[in-house]
Length: 516
Image (cartoon, rainbow, N blue to C red; front, top):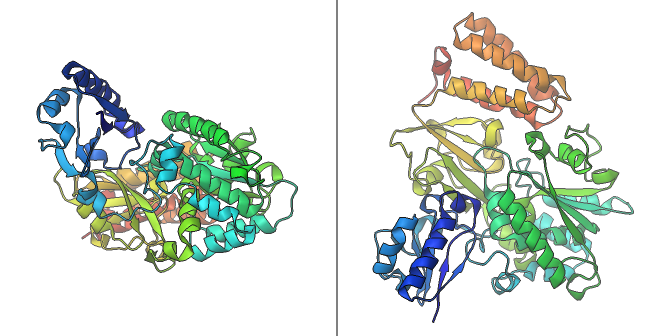
């Protein structure tokens, strides 16, 4: 009887040798006369243990990692095919505290199944949401999503139901669903993990969005730096069409929805929805003036439901289990769960799906294990390169859209990058402005010119040249960028700069540090 092994084909696992581990496992099994079959699953999100090898046993899957090709022989010697203990062993995968303490709704299947098996997908609850949606009217679908409290997981946190209702109620001969998969924020990888580990979930969510809004066509705008996701999605789309999940007769319902994959060209600003639409239409990726919003006049001038990967992938759970089942998770107006991504100077980087309300301290220490360097954590940046820097004195702040906004911060896409006490926060502030200058589309003056002037002002401030005057001008400049930029790139770059100045003034050579 063949023993089933699971080794992720996720890009993070492959980058540290998962493919070579598979080769070694097959070769070792062959030389010993052992029969094994290997499933290339998605990553469980325990990235510090990659490459993670799981063995299917009668008790459940047993985890070993991180495994290198050189470890394979000792695994066989130790009887890992029957789940025996080993120095690289972690026991039952589901019992690993990092995974066990999570609340996985959207990522429930990632790491469990063969990502390209529709049989696996359905056996683990896939398509239940779509079947429920096919039994509803468009307005009923929109109402359920609205009641769930789902908000955009790409960063803006706009209520998904309101956006979909706008598209539904806007008359047009053609409507579109567009997925923003241009995941470009530092420290973020949840979109990639989901697309590589559970692609049919995204497809199902987009089909439901089409049913809800009256759209019959959709596009996934994927960043070109994700070749593994592109490969998986291309194959998943092909299999979905063969199965009847896409096309002119969705699951025999007579309804239609078609979906295409589009690769971006590496521009950060194309993560902004209107610049993305420009790029999708074959134009230079620059920000559009608003109004009108994309829900009224989006792709090709037609009403467009534009959401990010995790937003769309959250919808099947809501349709299958009910709005209340999703709304019961969370805090305040932040309902449901978010896939927090732990990166930077942490012992245990990875993905943690938890309900809103969890604190930074829980994520950084209970899951992340503190700094990888062993030095005290000094700050974290939440929400990508435009997110504020949060000092250690505020690590008990709950992850909640409104709680963060009250502190001049953003939750954003859920990326959390940690820094120990060796970090120079003045350099980090400069990097934020420099990043904005490099990535600006150039359409508006506050972003295009303000970011460059900001770098110059910070350099003079750090050099001690009339600091009071430099600080006055810099604050005026940041105010202009925040309130006069066309999009979030220029409008939010002041967040990391201001927070660094507020909490770590000593790093800029200023007095009265408030850091604790």
